[in-house]
Length: 219
Image 1: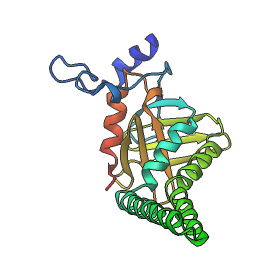
Image 2: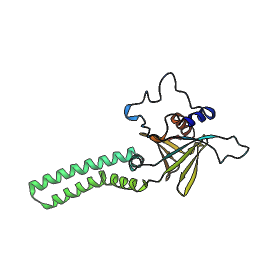
Image 3: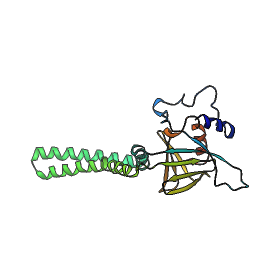
Image 4: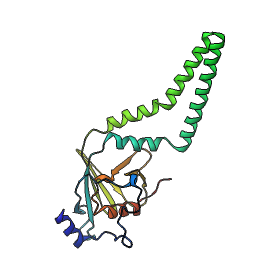
């Protein structure tokens, strides 16, 4: 860490906080980032050509948990409109189940009991099944592989065992923060999740500044 701070002071100085506030001073207690002890590393841009100006980047290493993936997928799939429709469907189905059960008690007709069971199953399908599917999918994605991310002012280099790709920070990607996770939406099918727990506090403002400057907020 000492070596990292020394190199950072000579190569790239992070933005200074305004006044005497600390970065976490104005954040609610539940939104503060719990650093897991992972150390960042300054790296040079190996893809830059000889005549181009060398950019200094920040290298981060982390492994996503199924819980982190679940929170992002749930937030991405459960839009406001979908949540509203699901709530309406659950309330109507539950109300109809109560009506059918009351009819069954008063008439003894087993058809009302069958209809009540159908309504109860519909409530479970709408309210529980999608969440269970997302949770199972999250567990499958969280395979324990180590992710390496190098963040430069103009692009991000991503690395997995046997796979590498680059994400330009030219405003084409969308960015949103979900709890203590920064999510980059590359397109409709691909996203990158960065847990802020793996970002050393000394470089957190610089990481956030580069990501926000090179993306636009997700609508």
